[in-house]
Image (cartoon, rainbow, N blue to C red; front, top):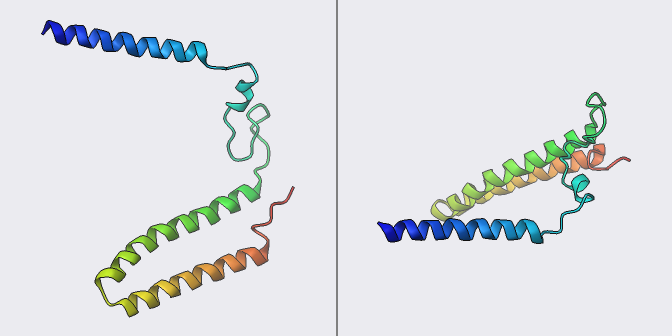
Length: 117
């Protein structure tokens, strides 16, 4: 029991020593404060929160979500190709991909992917 207590105290001492050394040796400066400040949705945290929201961030986020959901739908489809009829799954797979590519082409034609300054 005594050895367990000694080892746990030794481990805590080593952990605290490593954390103190990391804080002492890290190269944090005043300039890093701006870099580490939160930056979300195109807003500068130093300005007023009542600025109009950029629609471009919203459109890019929606397109990202669409293609993120696409990946989650395609992975089980690949597994089902392995265990069932290859032709029916392949037709479903290519139909799904063509619909997504047509949607991407439509977004591209509408200018949703063009970043406006």
